[in-house]
Image (cartoon, rainbow, N blue to C red; front, side, top):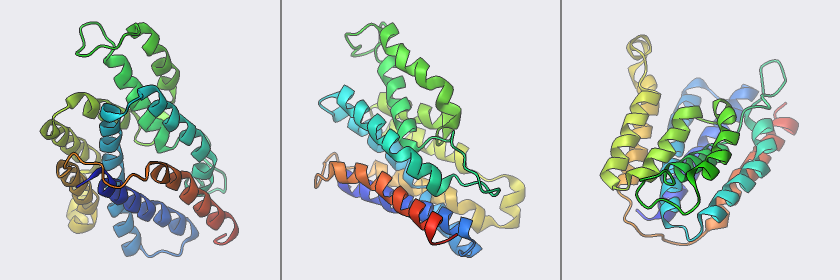
Length: 241
């Protein structure tokens, strides 16, 4: 699979998950359809984490790459809040941060780890200077999508290098994140296992990456995140209320 097809799969699974969230809040989606869409959406983050690590290794300017992620994180935050963070009481979780912040935090952590004395390919800037942005974002990690383990996964994928090692870490993360407890598994085995199965499908897609880029629609894939959130926010606010 090329980068293009992995990005497309990540986008489609994300759209399914986010659309289900909005329809769930409006009470117009059945439990079966909702469970299936949310389970399918579990493919998105492992794929985005893999793509972020791949982009980090191949980009011509890591600083521009980080800035681009942070710019889109800022642009996406209000649509993210109004589309997906509505409380049952009618308010919103304004402190919850979108996935672009998670991706940026993971890459900033990688940037610092690669600058540590003795690290392979250590960057020219002193490691303590690269620690500063990590310390700025660190207090925000609990409010990011996928929290600490999501940030750590991105850093590990960046540092792993080899595809098999990346596949191993993605598999371990998926098992830790989505393995259901025994009670839920006994009550409804298929329904509770679906998120894990789809997350493992994402691992398979990453392992089938062939090292090729495919069609270049870089900014389209960035823009689809805030644009779809804006449309879902408008739908939630003015159509489904």
